[in-house]
Image (cartoon, rainbow, N blue to C red; front, top):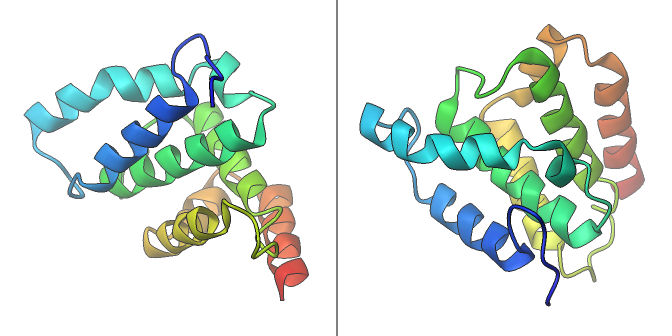
Length: 142
C-alpha cells in the first residue's frame, strides 16, 4: 500500500504499533523520553482525523498500546484523550466482520482496552455517548 501521510505512512504506523507492543507498562524515564516524539506526532489532527479505515485501525492500535504503556496515567490531555477514545471506539464499528483483514487487530485493541480499564477513564472524562456507542458496536457483534 502506497498511502503516504504527512507524518507517517500506513506501514510505518504498523511498525510503530509493533514496537509499542514490546514496551513494558510503566517504562523507565529514558524509554518514556524515547517514546515522547512518537506520542506527540501520533496525536496530530491530520492523522487522528484521517478518513482511511486502514489508517484508523492502525492508529487506534497504536493508541491502545500507548494507553497500556502509560497506564494508569493518561498520555495526553483530556481533550486529546477524548479524540483517542473516539478513534478506538470507531475501530470497533466492524468488529462483527470476521472476514475483515482487521478483525484480529480489532480484537487485540479490545483486549487492551479491557486490560487497562479504559472505560473507567472514559467515564472520568464524561464520554457517556462514546461508551454507549462502544456497547452498541458490541451488541451488533453479538
